[in-house]
Length: 293
Image 1: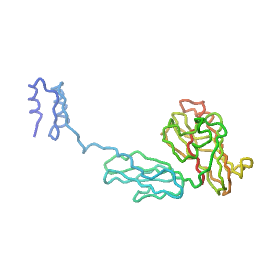
Image 2: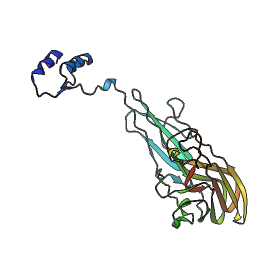
Image 3: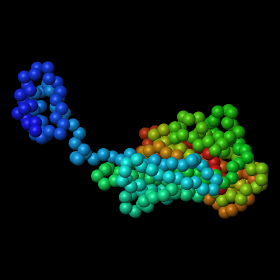
Image 4: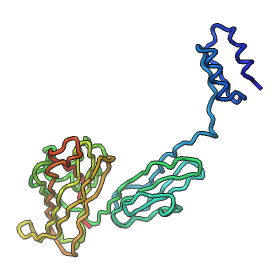
């Protein structure tokens, strides 16, 4: 029942600094008049939730691991009651109409980029949460870095590429094999032949730090390192603008074949594009795992 007249009468209090007007009949117009009359007083009308639209927080992706051998169940949760979660598995961004609605845990059986977004009437939709889950059917018995990579001397044997220890998205974690200028070459060895159809590289994309996808990847295979044949050449897509930082994959699919040795050759981008702040300089490649399937 408080009116502007009642508030104006408070001007007789010289030490008055702050007045709360929560849940009163004071309008925004009244408030402007009061602030003009009492310039040294702060008038607080409180929080009007009916006219405020809040953005939903991103959904939460829940899985025991991010690397699996056969299949992996992934759950998606949101803590706001009534929020709807939409997801995609094909690399596109989820929307509120065409993307499937999450209702039960997803069972992943291949390399998968999972993206999810939350929606609720009366709220702004959330940012997209994204995560890559990697399949690893065959774990190499050993690895060897031949050339091009910059790692601590204790990892020159290529262990970082097959240790099943995924790096954080932070490029300074110490778990990344990094290189620029010259191609990186490594060998993967198996004690017994494996019948594989895919080699997948886990890489970091951090455009602001000049960490880009490689310009080309070659996969070679054979019974030993002296008898290798080219299985696949891949030219990954390059970013066309500044974008967020994320972990990506480079997938190299080839006809089924039995091999005991694989050689992977990865070329970094020779020149950053014209729209990049360091245009013309070498791009860098950061890689932390190689998966054989």
